[in-house]
Image (cartoon, rainbow, N blue to C red; front, side, top):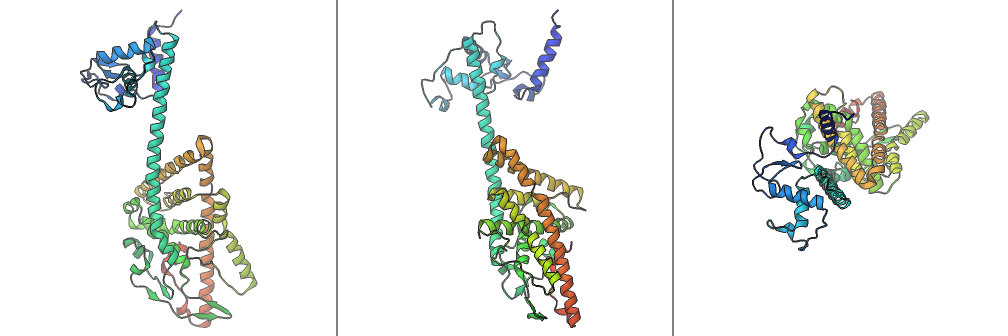
Length: 416
């Protein structure tokens, strides 16, 4: 006993809904007859083979599929440029490109030749749609890479040059955030002259070690160049940058050490080492442990052979962190949308670079480095507080606590 006709119609409708092919008539107003043929732009008589078309185009498309003739274009590369009178081969392809579905043609007169032609047209349509999707993704990726490259190029002079020797930037984080982006140190207002060098025991503590400060300042200035940053309120900007500045600075120094200086150890962007000299053996061992811990991000970059485009995307993803505590719901939403854009862009790059199979694996490998970088930033903050406390105690013991080195922005970020 055959199933009822209504059941067949229901199953056919469900099968069509599950298909990936988007039907043109689904997006048009209901209960309205089309006025123009989508193929030749003449008056339409209704929907046929999923598009509004005239009777002439409907009959031509159906007859061409059923007969299965393999038409050839007698004007190669010319029909696509002519709006009128295309050949039968180009007209049939135009019908498919405009949305006509070859699989919707049903007839008892279908031959093997007809079925082959129908399948060839479907394959042509799918190949063109896939190519169009790839081109769109590549265009979006190129625009994203150009934007990130522009931001990174803008802060490179600040990273390389550093604050002029003998001067220090005494601005607070709030002052930096409320000022427009400053990409050269000559435009920093009110640079102060550093105090003279001081000696504690046999250790010479140099004044104004600006390498870390310069790297942090470059990360803050780069964040101000992103479009989403203006949408956040000042409190959220401070909370966000207190959390991510050390992360972005570490990533910048690690990639610069590998790509530009060709080092396998962490070097500041201005070419200096992050050295801390202490007297006691226990403190020396602590410094050694800290120095080894500071190589984690660089080791991850070396191990995973991260390239420049992956580095730029990954740093932008780490910057847009909606999980920072005490952010408003609106700011979390803004950061979440921005992070998703960079995630999607990096995923597309991994697929284009490594293929559909290895691309997702590469994407997961890059994201797996995030906890390691976060932990390194936390250890860096903890050690900064430890060193600063020891420094202040030594100055108090000598009776000149007012000469202790204070770096306002750096301390605000590190002590958050």
